[in-house]
Length: 104
Image (cartoon, rainbow, N blue to C red; front, top):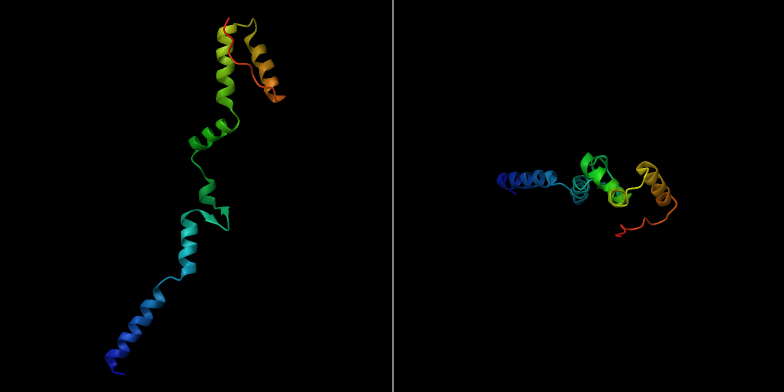
């Protein structure tokens, strides 16, 4: 083998040594996707506060409940609006469905 061929082989050997393995590439992709072993990584669990708040409100139907309460208070005009809201929230806590706005 000539010296030039030997240099070419060494250059190829060094180049293939620097190519990342499939395992390394998959691990880098998992880190980029913020998922390792099916678990969320620290980066993924840190969601921006606005998005986290919106998800929380949707999950617990907070906006829906308060829209129902405020529209019913405005329409029905109970003597004690605070007591009305507390009574209705107790119903929600007990698993009852709030009535829809009743038109007279």
